[in-house]
Length: 385
Image (cartoon, rainbow, N blue to C red; front, side, top):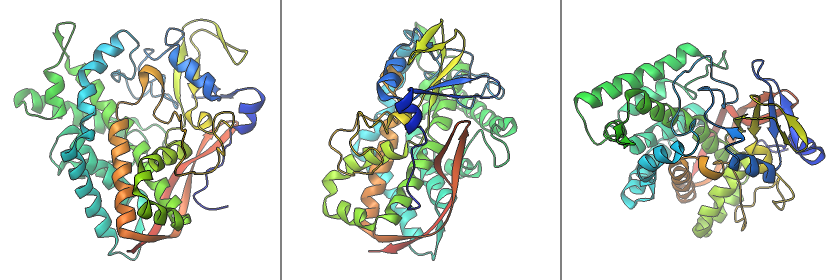
């Protein structure tokens, strides 16, 4: 088995019954595993709500370390649309040519640097730096701010010894409070200032609402992008012929991005809270209990995807749900796609092969399921074209 392979721990339960069970901090979760059921539940916002207690729809739950509602992530329709409409255009800026040119410059600089090294640890020294530096473009903040974000490590709510680290989370919360205060005193063209000038129902957003958007922006796209970048580099280390294919056929890079994101599913699942007694896959779900929409399982559903456990870089039909589904589709998806698109383009241009030297896998414990979600460390050597 190659190091970059990700097995499907959900297959048997998905085929046999369509759901799984896990306990999360004494708040049990029914995991929805089939693609059609994941989509149905994601669309049924009146039955399965996002606007529960802040932090509860995240798995593992963040209720003990967060009381600020992430916006629009933890808001249901119709208010969800009102919030989303405010910022949708901002988060589509990565489609612009100038944005993409700046992102290419950031990516190329990191690749050129690691090409001079005998080896590089990808998670901390490559993926974290790329994610943080690219985020300065999305927030329209000074490039130098990325050094602060890099110092936080790969996850803003978790540390090596603690799954949910309240002290670490407070570093992010305090930082955002300070940046909001700066934007109030000296408005600029950054996302903080834009949000502070926005109105919903004729009222300007409060500091708490702005903070909710910013927490989501920092936390939602951090370890997910880091996982996507790291896992893709591991894949190309195992499959040098795929790098060659992208060099010869750059027109398939867009499809390759979607396929890598489908296969690796950087975020395993996301929760919802039942508003009434109901059923999932003929399994009873009680009011005020949680389900999770298991994106990782849905992406391997053999009734939908041909060869679901293989990476097919030019896959024609790819209705994956790695960025969510329905009205709660990931706001940062455009930015994440552009990071991956530019990364694959630059790797194909500059690198012939990647030597995988060492790795330590990151395994999620989901009770009856154990899922590889990425790497705690991945050491490689890039070979210059």
